[in-house]
Length: 553
Image (cartoon, rainbow, N blue to C red):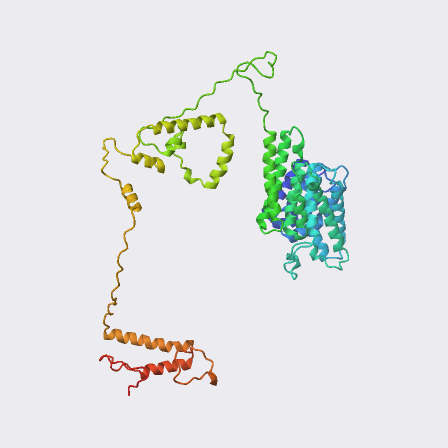
């Protein structure tokens, strides 16, 4: 039908069948076997391309059940093997076949573990695997990238994984842990050795510092799943990624725009790979090295692009037409611009503080800045190198200006208040222009200072304290007396719950005349209650108190 009919009509019918399967995944078991005769290895190129793409899409679909994938995978093995054995097969067909093989490899592995008597599917899968690995080195980029994914799937299947429920092997992760030691076809040690060899082949891309951005990106993306699901090889993978240098292309001069894009792509993929490891396991043993590597990659990327994009500095040209390098024979003297003397503002009229005396700048921001907010240790660390960098001529001019200010200030008639302000470093107090100065009126600060400097008062005669009596408490009513009495009785009897339950020995019995509060036990409590009962408050109203040893009877 495919050879005699119109190819366009055939592809149209195939697309209709594909749409039916996409709408109802339960139809895949009926659609796939019917297509194998149409899109097989003997079909024309267009049909082979369509069939290979359909197989890759079918087995990568998340809506198709794993049981159906396993059964259909057993049926398409012959077709995939025929595609790979066809000489000079189309690149697009091989690419889709490799993708399909990566999808069905775990299911073929699980089938051979559960059915050791059926060795044919595993032999076909082994032939497909050998063909893919053999052509991987010289394959075009598309096939090479798909082969990287295939190797990742083989390594993940042929290394031990976790067994969640040994009673339900069909629900566990497909890994080498499912294979019994005495399996007649599959040898666990051989498969694990093969997986480690393929992992080394995969890591060789990073160990050689490959500059192929597509291959490096595909390798890093495939290694993420192995780090997550296979802890036995995770540290080996992470150590290799930490030693990878994505800036090998930056050593070429000049760095082309294509190389810039490749460097940025490889660096960001490596950084993302390491960041995902930290996010999933912040307490990873290699977390410190991973964080350092992330920071190093970021800073190096900034430095590389900063140096590559930096323009050559423009040559310095003389403004007057003469250059000392080109006009040496003319003995032309470069005119030196006269140094401008610093503009020093004059002192204001009236009282002047120390801050105003030593302030030589006209910048209001610097004038209003409060140096007290800076710690003293910071000031010391700033002033020492600052004094070394100041021009000696400017420093001498500033010293002379302050000295001239001081001499002119000393020539002014100064009052006592002005001298005090200058000595203490405080500025003149603001006053209204119309306010007259009254020399006979002292300020509050002056009065306080005079009181502080006054001699202490003479020792006064000691004054003895008189008797101090607390006021009597208010009288209690009958209800209050009854309430307080009940509370006292309740507190006395409530202590029974906290007494020790152990019976005292004979040596601990001190008699009835002992102190009641000696021990916190039941005998002490009985003694205390008995004494409270026998010493009634008789005669308290008449002010006659009985002694402790007297009796009321």
